[in-house]
Length: 283
Image 1: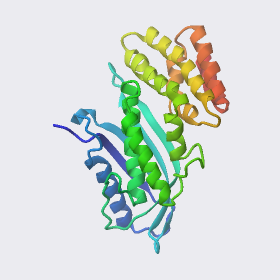
Image 2: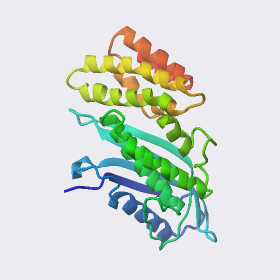
Image 3: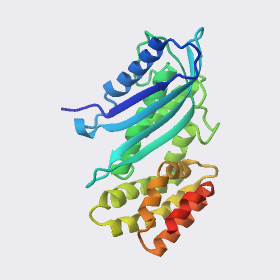
C-alpha cells in the first residue's frame, strides 16, 4: 500500500501572545499536522516505514485578532536513516523568520496544484516538496529535481500574494533565493556533494568507515566549489550549519591528517564564524 511521504510533527509556541485563545492554536496545530501528513505529494511509492520524519517548530511572535494574521518563525528539520545503523541524519533544516499567514479556527486547508491562493497552504506545500526533494537528493544523484520544480512553482505563486519571504531576488536566504541557488546550473556540484556525502559516505560508514570518510573528504572539494560558484549564495553555509556536529564527529580523532586538514580548511573557508567548532576536527 502506498503511504503518504511525510511523518510531520508540528509544535506551536504561543507564549509570546497575551491571553491566547488556546483552542485557536490547538486548531492550528491540528490542521497543519493533518495537511502535511494526509496529502500524497508525489507518485513515488513510499512504504509506511519509509515516511520522512520531520519537525515543524513554529513560534508565534504576533497575532492580530482583527485580521487573523500570524507572524511567526519556523524552525524546520527533516531526518533520514543512515543505512546499516540506528542513526538518523539531518537531511534538510532551515530557520524561516518570515513565516507569516492568515488563519481562522474553521479554515479548511487544501492543496490544489496550479491554484494556490492561500499563503499558509503555499508555505506548507513548499516545505513538503523541499523536504521530499532534499531526501531524494541524498538517495540518488539529483533525485529531487521534480519536487524542486514544483516548489519553484509554489514560490512563484507565493510571491504574487505579497507575503514576506517569497520575493524573487530579494534575499539570497529567503525561500525563493535558497531554492533558486540550489537549482542553479553552476550549483550542480552542491547536489552531487549531497549525494556523495550521504550514499558514498554516511551510508557506508558502518561497513567501511575509512573509505566512507575518504569519500566525504574528497567530496568536500565539491562543497568548496559550490560555495564559490555564486556570489552571496548561502546554500553551502546552510549545509554546514545543520551538519556541523556531524562533520566534526566524522573527522575528529579519526581519519588521516590530510583528511582532517582538508576538512578544516574547506569548512573554515565556508563559515569562519564556526572556527571553534572546526578546530575540533584537527584533534
